[in-house]
Image 1 (cartoon, one colour):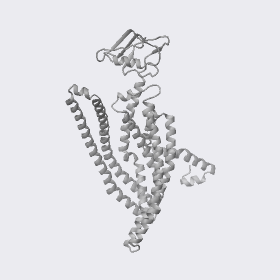
Image 2: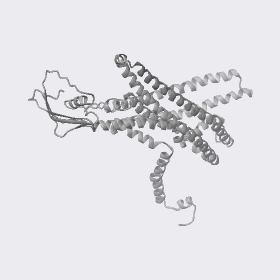
Image 3: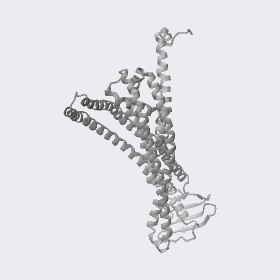
Image 4: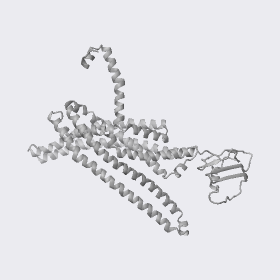
Length: 474
């Protein structure tokens, strides 16, 4: 290889070779680099994990279709809105600049008032109407996506055609509403991140012009801004972790309190007759105090986090942006009409590079909800793995017969029924001490017939147990 400059070397290549080099770099190398950088700076891996989690409830193929429809609408709405926002920012800055002309005597108050009226009716009002209409359409499309996702959880995952799996909810520390809210939160957080980045794309497209005009400025401002932001993010991240820990404990206690209150309200007469009102009162009071204490701690940390974010933006970032814009105005890369626009360009650029650190609170919250959904996944799998009793339907038989049926539940309970025949039209009473297997026996019967349910948790049937039914209408 001769020691020549790279562009000189490329110029000496035959056109076909130059084309091949460009094709290889543009078709294979560049996309891999772009994708790698995107995964490094943006939480795409986390969003991908959340998509896989949602697909476990909605189904992979169905969720793929739902996501495609949603993204087609979002891209065709948010990107044009981004360009529309650039024009609006310029017109808004132009109006604000005209205010300075009053002090210079070039414009009087009445003239500026006329200008503002024209701005409202010719710029602000059309922009507001366009954005409201387009965001409403986008919101409606996402609403359909969210509705179908919630339906997949509430109906198809918990109440599938082959049998209800509500035991997975009943045996957890949460309610079906809590699981549905977690799924909705995971979806809305993931979608919100993508939506905001699509809206900022047109402004990010202005960054290369800044880089070409003042490369040393961009190379100085961005690293300093990133360093400041990284320090702030570490502190905010610590606070966010504590806030999410409190949020998880608050949700669990709140669900537990709801269950207890519903149970105690339903059995009010038993509480009154059993003279356990004081015990019930103490339990309600303890839970309420604990919830109030955790809520106050969480609220205090949220206030500190909000103040840090506001102080950081107001007293550190904004003055730094103004210095950068001063140099850009000096070289006439921008005009005074573009000041606020380029503040947003720099801010969106930094926001893109520091998406992970800036979204620590949202990502931590999303992971909390994802953990709750994974618990439901585990519960559903456990319920489905319980199996069902082996039953036979004999149309010639007119009775329910049990032959050599044995079952156990836990280490201390085993029941064996050598032979039992239950005639139709009769009323039977099943008696016995607590824990002797009465409810388990009825749970085994419920696992037979057309509407078969899973065996009660921890139940194991003995090999050779026979349950003979006259019909599957049990």
